[in-house]
Length: 210
Image (cartoon, helix red, strand yellow):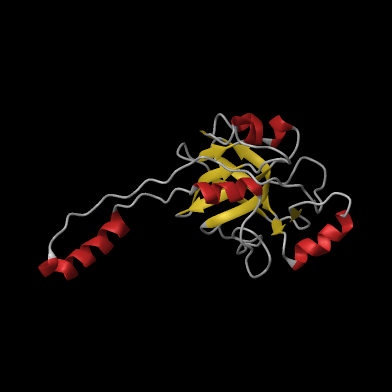
């Protein structure tokens, strides 16, 4: 769905390093079958891991990086899964940054954008033009590349004004829907097994979880 707001352009945004308290849970343990059955035990471990393990939850460090717009850049200098998806295809597993152009309790449409962190050539090029206002990252959104993904009741949405505690799709309506907010909000979509597992709003400059 095309944006109802003014034409979007390349943006340079300020980021702040933050921490979020969220923990991972350990998977189920398999019984010790003894040395004689070690090979069978190894096979059972592989099968169990592939059939009963729940979807991985983000670690505190990974979530903090999304909130802070920080992390290890890919070969092309971008953070997350990048900023270009296969044409006509849904987003692959990973963390995708985009500008929300449409939102409902059943789905979200984002215009994919590139996030470049410090230490990359792309960051250096854009930062030169903003020498009076140094930022920890830059967001470039100069080409419209929209993707629509389904949102379910199991999708966890982490918003800054909620201190990044997870809420459901209904509770996030007034914070993400451009018609409700009056502007476009940038978010990370965490895709797991082809589904929107989490939507994470980055922090504004100076924000810290309490």
